[in-house]
Amino acid sequence: MKRSTERILTTHVGSLVRTPEIIEAMMCRELGKPVDPEKYEATLNRDVAEVVRQQADVGLDAIDDGEFGKVGFMPYVTERLSGLQALPLPPPEDPDSPARALYPEPERYSDFYRGYAAQETTQWLPDTPSRPSYHGSMAFAAIGCTGPIEYRPGQLKRDLGNLKQALEGVAVQDVFVPVAAPSTIEMAPNLHYSSQEEYLFGLAEALSVEYHMIADAGFIVQVDDPILSMQRQMSFAGKSLAEYKKWAQVRVEALNSALEGIPEDRVRYHMCFGSQNIPHTIDPPLKDIIDVVLQVNAQAYLLESANPRHEYEWQLWRDVDFPDGKILIPGVVSHCTNVVEHPELVALRLSNFASLIGRENVIGGTDCGFSQFWNLIRVPPEIQWAKLGALVEGARLASTRLWN
Image (cartoon, rainbow, N blue to C red):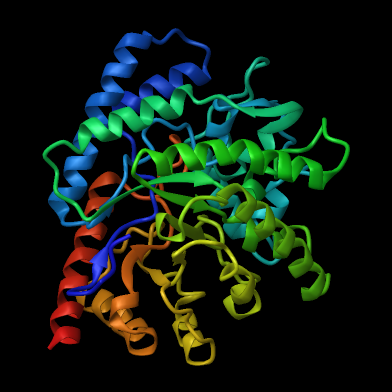
């Protein structure tokens, strides 16, 4: 993995807004309409090549395929792991509905959530008996484990092939491929394994196949794990920090078992506090969980830092020793607001981190992906590219100052 030895490098978290053609094909699949497989595969191959070129043209140093071949950062596993299938999704008013956990403090912010739900549901699709729709951020709740988990590599081979072909003639520093963490997939209810821990480590064993295939193809593995932090407010609200950290520790152990054999410098770990543009007033402080995060066997850590609820946390590194040989990729532009950050603000944010952990240990990034699901677009594509351009320009400004 390249470091910022001569200037501040830039990257992003992974998902980019898919093209209209890909969105249309995925919409047809959701609605049970026929999709020409040959036409879809040709479209996917073409559009991956284009998004790779766009990332290089905007000046990003570490890029990916935009996750164009996935329906979402988590539900893609239903097409790659046997034993998972769609389940009915409880309505939002149901006490067991994931909406009540993902959108916390509903009484305090009731008016806001009514408007916010209406905004997000414009991108949802109606449920069908055969396939409940993936409802935005609540996609994991529409999946359940009903049999033994095994990895099916077909789609990954396709995506890796498209990415390799797209990179021909494109000059970038690094290429990464996002994947889901075992703890994130574990949110799909276990209806098969005798215990939750058996289920968790069964997922880790199957996902290890995916992780190793990516590393063996010469790409960096990026593990996405928003659930590690979100569980503090979801399942451990009102419980002690010690109880939560005991749970989190086992999830990190499962992830590390899946990464075993992959060199640390081929792994990035992304943890955020949920991609929703909501108040975030009961997110756990990073200081409460950073010791657990740093136990993940990765060289680089992508942490949400542009979110105004968490931006102050760059100061954490005054009290926490940054481990030798590691890289921090703080989000210095947001993924879920339409305000395009000024490059000077990006430079300031990067300089703050560099002043505490060293310029060579910092790479500029985004808080989260711009489209975690094909039908959940956080910002319009033109704003997405403007934000990434501001990221690159801000890193250039910071580099000029830091290296002078």
